[in-house]
Image (cartoon, helix red, strand yellow):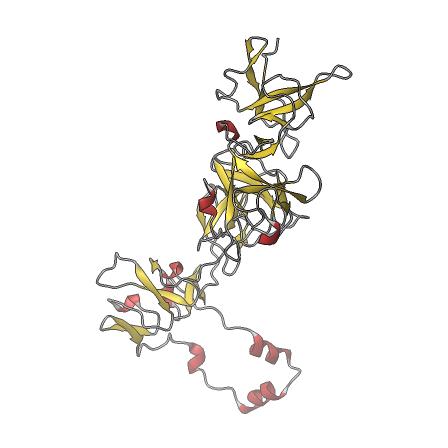
Length: 416
C-alpha cells in the first residue's frame, strides 16, 4: 500500500498497477520529548524541569502536577510550591454576577415554572463566554489559549498558511487535512504534525512538482485530489512493514528523484495477480510487479529490473520500460535483437531497453527495434543507423494526461 495521506482513499492505476487506499497514522505517543504543550497529544501537557529549561520536557497527563520555578509557570488558580504547581488560594477573578443579590421570589418562580419561556431556555442552554487570555497560564488545566480566549485543549485552530512544499503547518484539531490556498496541509504516515503539499494538475506526472515529489491523483474516484506527494524510498528495504497489517512493500522509482512504495503480497514470479487487490492474497511478492497487458485487472507477476543498466531477465524476457526510471521483465520478440532490426510482434521487446515499434505510413509500414533514451544522457551513444550516430528524440510520447512527455524518447537519426 502506498504511503500517503490517511484521510484519502481510492484506486489509481500506475502503469498497469493499482495504488489502493493510501493510509496514515496519528501518533498518540506521549513518551517522546516535548518543547511546549503543543508538542503533546490532547489531554497531555509538557512538563519541563525548571533546573534544565533548555532540555526537552516530558508529556504528562494534564491532571499530573506541573513542574515550575515561579507562579507564572502554573495555570490560573495554581501557585508554585517546592518547584511543583499546586492548587492555590488565588481567588477567582471578581465577577459582578457573584456579588449581585439573588433574584426576588417572583422572578425565581417565573424562571423555574414557566416552561414556555424562551428567555428561560436561552439562559439554560447558552454556554458561558470564553475566558480571555494572553497565554496558557491564564486558562484552566484542560484548556489552552487560542486567539485570546481559553478553549478546550486540542481544539485550537490557528491558521498557518502554506507557502512552500514540505513546510510544517497546523492542522485543525481532530482533522486530517486542511486546504489553505494552493496547498493542502495534511498528516503523512509516521508524522505527528501537518506538512504542506502543493496542489498539482494531472496524475502520474513529475514536471509540475518540486524535485523529490510526484503529482498523483488520490482520493475518491469521483472527486480525486492531485497533490505533490514526497518521495518515499530508494529501494524496497525502505518499504518494509508499510501495510496496515505489517505487509512489506515494493519500491518503484519514477523520474524527478522520486520513489513510491506499493503494497506487496505473496504471489511468486509468473503467478496470476490482480491490480485491484486490496490484500496480500492478490498482490505480487516484493520486487515483483503485476503486468496486465491491457487485459483488465488480471495480470502476471514479473520481476522489476533496471533497464538503463542492462539488467538481465529470465529467458524469453527482456527488461522493458515501466516508468521513466524503473523497468520490468517483459516478453521478448522471437526476432530482432539490435537497433533497427526487423521484429515481430509489435510492442514486445527486442532486448533490454529496445522495443518493437511499427514505423512508416500505410501501406509502407515496417516493424523495427528502437532503443529508448533519456534526454541529456549518453543513452544513444553507440546506437547507429546506416553508419550515422542517433540522437534522443523526446517529442514522441505523451503522458497519462495526454500531454507531451519530454522525459523519455527514442534513439533516432537526426531530422534532415
